[in-house]
Each structure stands twice: as C-alpha cells, then as structure tokens.
Length: 426
Ligand code: F6P
Image 1 (cartoon, rainbow, N blue to C red):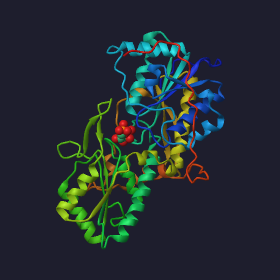
Image 2: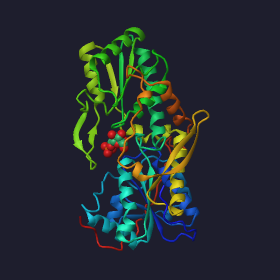
Image 3: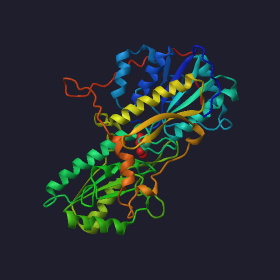
Image 4: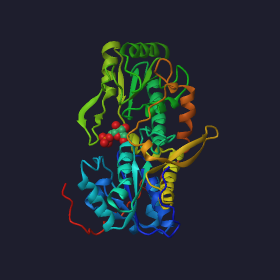
C-alpha cells in the first residue's frame, strides 16, 4: 500500500470517475458507490465520458446535476452509464503529449482524485496516472477500482461483475439443459453454450454450479487453461449421450488448440491488441455433427451474459458498490496507486472485507483458474472450485419493474461541463 498524503483537512478539489473496458451488469453500482460516498464527504464528482478518452477530450459529465434517485438507480442498471472505452495510454516517454493533456484537463477543472474503474489493462492506465503527480508537478491521486466479468484480476479474491455473469451462466446452463433433456429422444442430443473469458476459464467454471455428479449438466466444460483434445472431447460427448441420452457442453471463448491458437478468432483486434473472440460453439457443433452425427443446438449469449442485470448476484452487486465507496475513502485518506480489493475471510458462512492493494501488483497481470479447480480429465470443476464459486452467485437483487413489464433502469442527464481548453489534437 502506498500512502503519501494523510492530511485530515477538508478535501478541496474535484474527483473524476471513469469507466473502462468491457462493462458489466454491476459497474454502475460501483459508480453509485463512488458518487454517494463522495457526496457524503462534500466532494464534487465529474465522470469522464467514455473512460480515459473523455479525460483527454475534456468531455466531462457533472454528476452533481443528477438527482439522488437517479444515482441510487445506478445500483440496479447495467451497462456503463458514462460510457466506457478500450484505450491504452503509452508510456510517458512514448507519448508525453497525452499526459500533459491529462494534467491540463485536471488542472483546468481542479481534479485532485482520479478513480479508474476497469480490469487489468485499465489498472495499467491508473498506475501510469498515479505516477504523474511527481513527474509533472501536479497533485493528483489515482485509485484503480476493480471490474471485469472475466474474474482475472490479480490479488483480489474476485472481481465485481463476475458473480453476476457466473449466476447468469449457471442458471442458463441449468435451464437450457432441462429443455434439451425433455426432447433428446427425438430431437437435439447435444447443446453447446459458449461463454466469455478471454484467457481465463472462470465464467465457464461457473457453469459447473448448475449441477453436480457425472450425469448432471454441464457434462463437459472446456477451459482456456487446458488445450482442446478433440479425441477426448468426442469420446466424452458420445459416452454421455449413450449413458444420459443427451449432453450439455459449456465452452470458453478462449479455448485453445494444442498449438496455443484460439479455436475461434474473429480476425480483429482491439486497442489493447486483444483478438476479438466468439464462435467456438459453432466450431464444436460442426465437429459433433460431422464425427458423431448428433443433432445439436448452440448458443452464444455474448453481451447478454455481461449485461443480465435482471439475474445479477446480490453478493456481486453489494461488492461492486462497496469497492466504489472504498475507493473514495482511500482517495480521501491520501492514498495513491492502490486498488480496493476483495479479501475472503471465510467460505461458509461467506465473509469478505475490502483492503487496499498496490496497483503495481495488479496492472497487466492475469489470474487463471488454479489447477486444483479442474478435474483430472480437465472437463469439470472440483469441490475446491465449488467452494470458491458458490458464494459469489448467492442472493438475488432484481431491478424494480415498471407497468410495461420492463426493468426501470436509470436515465441520467449526463450534463456536460463547459470546456475550458482547446480541443486536443492527437
Ligand atoms: O471485458 C472482458 C470481455 O467481456 C471478455 O470476456 C470479452 O472477450 C471481451 O470483453 C469482449 O470485448 P469487446 O466488447 O470489446 O468486444
């Protein structure tokens, strides 16, 4: 933990909050935690439009114009209320102009605290900004705030956003399996669900919570941590269909072949250099049809899984709010270059607390599934994995529904702050 300013004097200046990377069902709960905690301390909050890009472009939203009720409604509203982005800052040496621009924007609007809400790439951006104060002689504190459905951030026990996608995945696996089972005799025998998780199989693992025992779905889980073994996969599908009558497979989008290549790569890359994934389910389905002849269905929930606020985990929603609030507490305590992380103190009953961890231990690192969480054949999850995953999907926190039968999500004014600088030409 790095702590460089501990003065208890009344905070002066503004706090800038920004959302980054792929959004989640509960990232706005974190925003609510930040804004409500800052309001309670009398600290005005601006939000950057579209993450760090909003800071560079001086596109700042005055959250002070939002009502208390609108901010409270963020707790149950999916998506990123202020806009998010995938954008990686280069090093100070490689692009000093960008950092100078950030400091100009911070100075022009008296921004003294910057809270960046994202995953491991965003923690890298937060770390770089946390080092700016010294390098550019401007007093700015930066706190990274955790978020990612992929659950692959280092240090923290889990990542806000994951518990909800985990619940959606486990519930969907269970429900679709009931459907498949009911018609397998004369119709579909194999159902394949593809889930997110670029390099780590946490979301795929969560599907395993749908059932326990050899005959319960999902019968096969395919993780990015284990290279795809076609022969073993087909043998297990066949044995399951012959024994159970049908087979549910859950595959991670990040599934790799023996050569370490993605089975399904769309051919495009994002600003971080990550391949766009999606489409492993149809590849597997074609294989099943060609080699085993079974009728199949496959599903790719894609953004449905990470935006499914109606099926959010209450535990996840609470943790998302808590990290936002803690980030404000840390910032006001003078901390810099840290992230509030979730520390598990007990599995059953599930207990957790929040602590500060250095961003340098989180930025650019990826936490994969430990080997002890995968069964020996690599197609399922162990008791240890169930012990870890189970608490994260506990509880329901449905949004309020309106007379039209739809959830009542927050609608913000997103009132832009008047610009004080010339546009930034990159
Ligand atoms: O943020 C994580 C994630 O949801 C991954 O699981 C997925 O591969 C990726 O984002 C999709 O990113 P994008 O929406 O930018 O295509």
